[in-house]
Length: 133
Image 1 (cartoon, one colour):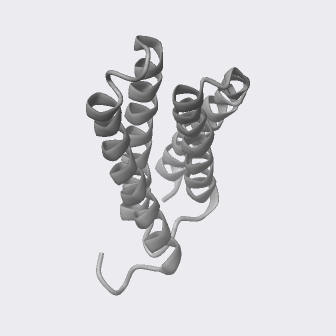
Image 2: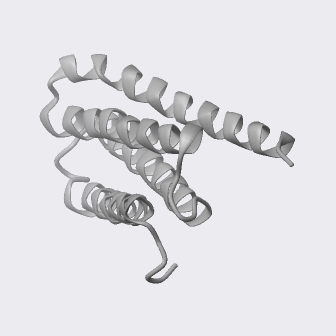
């Protein structure tokens, strides 16, 4: 993936890398910097947020790698949905853990739904491609 990569694929590569970086940083921050300051429940939210952010960041890297020159159709929509899901799901859990502002818990299911839609679009893309000549 050198200079031949399209700007949109480069964006998804960067988005995946940024999410991986943040997932590691937030997981380490929670495990080492916050373990004595947060409740077990809040630490669990941080771990869940970090795990989901990492896995879905890796999927964004896969989309960037397999979508040459750039993702289109369901694959592009999957990437958008996954990024939105990461922001809403992991973001709301991080904020919930750090602020204990319980209203944020209402956002988390929307993030989860966006992640599910992203996976569904990836499935649709794979089935649609397998039927093409």
